[in-house]
Image (tube, rainbow, N blue to C red; front, side, top):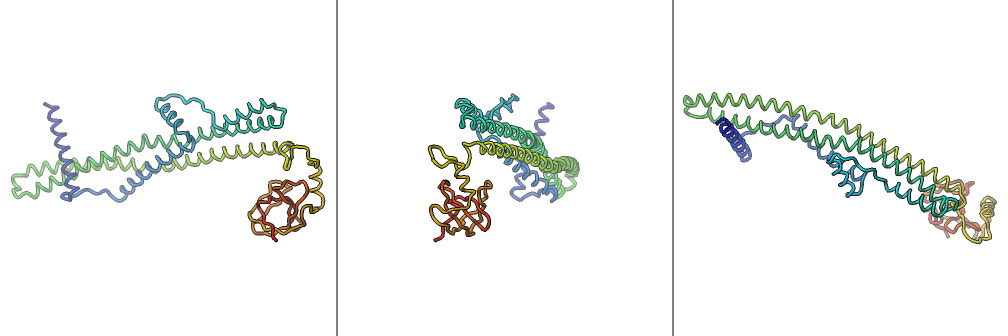
Length: 350
């Protein structure tokens, strides 16, 4: 009997809420409005949830572009299983280069270069793996925790508040109808009961409103935490790129120090040696193919080393060909400055 009574009460409450909701929609009943501050807190919570989900998803795409691997990692995470160590593409490339270099022979020019480049690729890959792991731990994990825990709790409290608001407005409507009845003496008991129900509903609503407001206020601390996570992500990314940059700069120096990678190095039976070419470049310039000509610079160019000349777009320089120089380059002069420049960056003036 008690369970039946409880079921009947629940059914009556559900019917009352449905009727109140319907009357509000068609404009036959008033609706309690939240204060502007509370509305702003709700909008902030909604924006935070939407953008956190989008940022978290895109961050996962950046850290792991392969959707199949992402799906595998997702299921492993849900099953609480440890992820298998996975080499990055740079590490795989480094291993292949090292293997190829050893097969060609470490003492050969190509073999030695492949081994050097392979070792650097492996280091870059390791740095990339550390960057991915740090970003996942410092940025993605806090975002997911907020979405899966805080957002769900806020949504639950907001739904409960909406229910309490319907109960409150239903009690208000009930009391209003009871008071407006002509036979006031016959409905005194109904009025008193409706007033008591209204007081109880108001108390429940106020309590739930305060709980929900506290939850929404907590979104501010979430913004602070996400700001810190964003800074840690940038720090990890900077470390990754700096490590890669330094390794590549050192690798470039090593490769340029070998004969095989020297600028303008040629292969074959050329009667003009590199020393002869260097001596001619250092000696007073002597036109070989044509006399000195004026040329217009088409694009800015930054010299890669001391033998080259930096250029600024639209400036006029003097150019002339030098025997033995690569056909893609030409010697240029600007005042007391002299150096070779790419032919694609200039236009000879007639």
